[in-house]
Image (cartoon, rainbow, N blue to C red; front, side, top):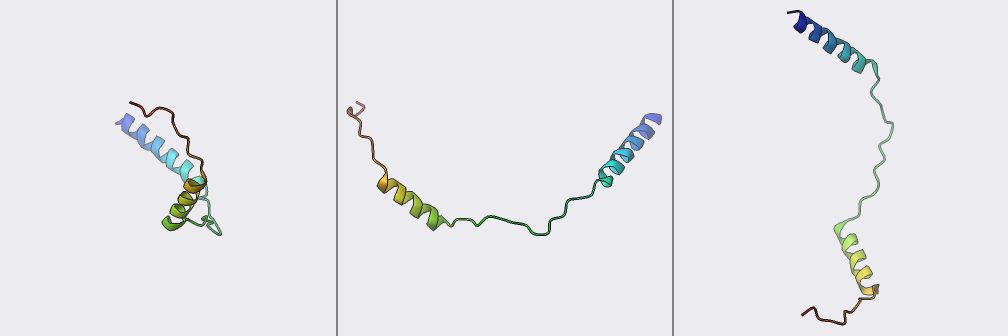
Length: 61
């Protein structure tokens, strides 16, 4: 019984410690603009066109 009481008191102390810290409050939540899939695909196509492909001398076989 005393171990149970000790655990209850420890839990209560922990709970009071947690409750004593104020929860952060934000006036304004700033989320960066998200890119659409079309914008990402367009950027990939432009990058693929401008990249210089490296040709291998051997075909691998």
